[in-house]
Length: 318
Image (cartoon, rainbow, N blue to C red; front, top):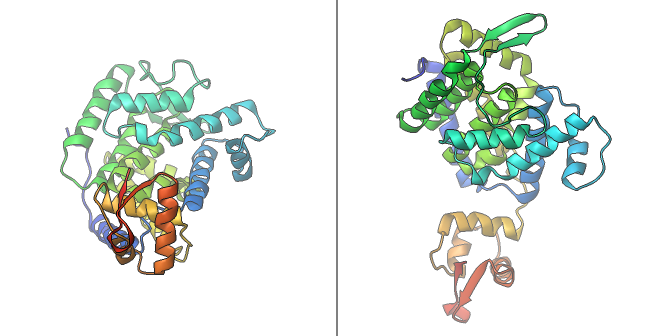
């Protein structure tokens, strides 16, 4: 059954704007972000998503953990970060459309933090905010069928993936399928779905923008609960995505390394044979000498296979 929501004029406007932004991003060759920006954004994503859940580690401390440096902080907070680093490093091994894959991700994310991580809850639970119960989740016996229905919607509904990612995020939080870790998992899985829409979302720090509007995020979850529809939450998350893409477009003057250019070109050309001229036609802002150097370095690193000589030289990705 399709979860309840309406496509409002605001949603249509945001979808239209996001589509225009995606066109600009492709034209600016920002689909595959530069290596250093990907690393920085991944750290910001982990720090923001966990801070929403009360984790105390800073961006600098998380960077130290990634670099295997000693960090003085509560053991639980360190373990949360290490688990998040692990699961975000394995996004390419997970399937956004599969319930078992989601459970695997939860097991990685919550290992050592709760009993039986990766297992759907079978008991009733209420979400407490302060001294009040903010949300009564569906009873334990309904969790599995509700999650199966949600994945059926994700796999089969014809609405745009942008919209479905927001609907999934809201419905996931409403179902509250695990005893703990649902907030960070809901945000992670929307990233997984968006990554399938475009690779640019894998390293876009959407969670940072959610953290900056954290109270509004909780308010709109509650508003959607009260209305019995995820419409307001869809509007909110599309706004977040729109701002994140706009911030990315402002960074167009980032300097791409030879590896960045080669990686972007790999996504474009795949396993087809190409020449230096093909490479230059795509990378119009570099010189012939730079193109030759990029290709030479890629051959030496074993990324490209070279054949022919001089003007007849051709390349192919391994």
